[in-house]
Image 1 (cartoon, rainbow, N blue to C red):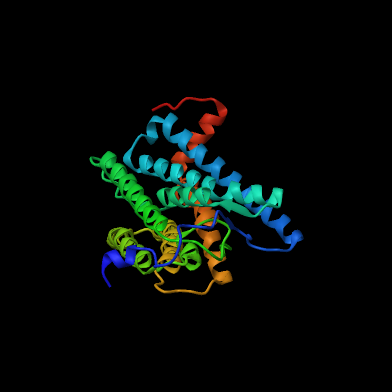
Image 2 (cartoon, rainbow, N blue to C red):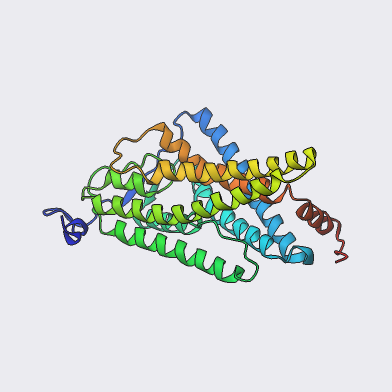
Length: 300
């Protein structure tokens, strides 16, 4: 089958007829919905508050004006954006009891989610820090734009219930009355490229870190280093594991509760864990935050 045939809508179908989609949410029981609302609100406030605190520390504290903290500040921006794109809309639907989203709003949410969640891990090269961040944003923007444009070519003329609490590609593919073969191959190929290269760098970096840690003579020093690395690797495994499960299963037709669980990890748990694991446990960040809260200036 040619590329043109894959991109063209099926013969006899009209342009997108679905004006809105239904997002039933995580649960249907009213009592449990109240619990979900409280948990999501708490996670949203913790994520936004924690990441904005990190940004304030990185901007105000001269000691933190280094490439590593620049990247952590960039990660904080991404986490705030990622959870803001999805969770407030969920909270609004729980309050209003309205579970619909317009076609245009769904596409917008999808674009910004992939823009903010689709960043590969960067290196911490001091000389190329600006170029690395710019390249990361460029790749994420290109990825989000490509998938959004490809999705616009699909027709939605029948079912409109999305088996998740936000708009995402695999769930929309299942609702299309056009062939989604091209879109699925595109998602797999781009995901493989964007995830594969950073993953190789991460494995290489942690191999060097493990070798360096094993050279530490102090047992306490080794234990502390492995504890820190283990926390970081846990977040990385969650990020890549949920990404592979969600975006790299070609031809998956059936929706399940596992999809909703993966959605919670992508939109709530990962952004909430990142500031706790990468920054707020850091003594330099803690010291900077204490000085900000107490109104003191750094001595450096």
